[in-house]
Image (tube, rainbow, N blue to C red; front, top):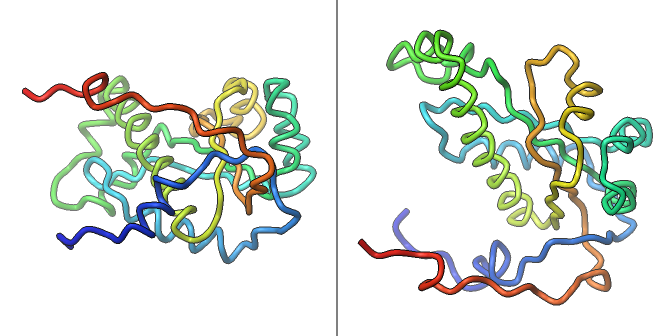
Length: 196
């Protein structure tokens, strides 16, 4: 596992990958979404906690439920996307730790410390959201991750029991390159990094 991946793989995952806003009229089947989850779940999380939860919104009814929570500039993007993923996290992820991390009693550590549980769920759920993007690209899908929505409204409609909490949205499908903007600049190493 110590060899570098080739240039084509780096291009697919990072260097040539783009955030898509328009989509080809091509559906993403459920088998692809299951494959996607089976890849992304292998990414590392603290104590193998796997706190992320994913709602794959594909139907018109699902999109209609999501629509009132969207910022105006994101409505058309979400309505046109074959799939919009609500990347969420389970606030009681620790209930699965006896199965996922049997080496020690992690459940008690989180169960009795709500602040630690919240920060761990959010941080590691965010990591898993990034794994979603990379896994989708690796499997040939394009992504359009976004903020620009009301988390409270999403949670009220999709997670009324309060256990799961939304983090961000990610459109998935086969992007239309005609809808791309020029690539934005990135900060240089000297601007973003420190060698200590």
